Length: 170
Image (tube, rainbow, N blue to C red; front, side):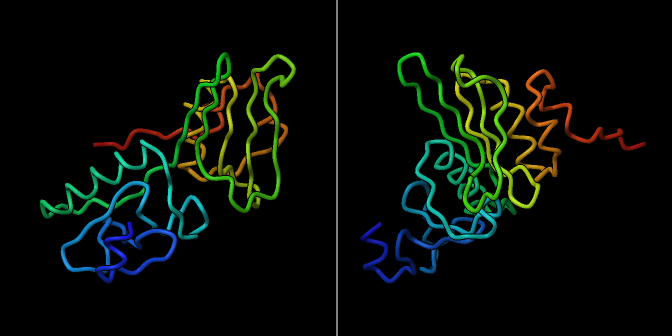
């Protein structure tokens, strides 16, 4: 990050990049931990995401942009960590949340915390709850407005909360 900032790229806590991971320097891209970008899943706040998945997603967008493609970075942030018998999975960014909902049983060490902002699902922290992590990604991507009581009901799969999409007639 420092070499790019010293070379004149805009940034402070990271090198600022656009939707195609371009810096403010001509023909220079930045991806991964050093890239600061406006993130729609953080309510438009500029963030740096230090995760493998973010680096991979940004690298794909950058490669397409270099080849003249129209790709833009719009990946739902995700993180994971295994700590002994605990599998922590996070999807979305909980920045600016105003409510939380607990799904599952913390005492049993299998639960999720769903973060809401103005009723919309913005993130989930899933402890030993891989299905919630996988299905929660779609809720975050859809910026779904959800009923907290329904979210709390761990017998209802999260994927059932998404609107049913009818196939487009051909």
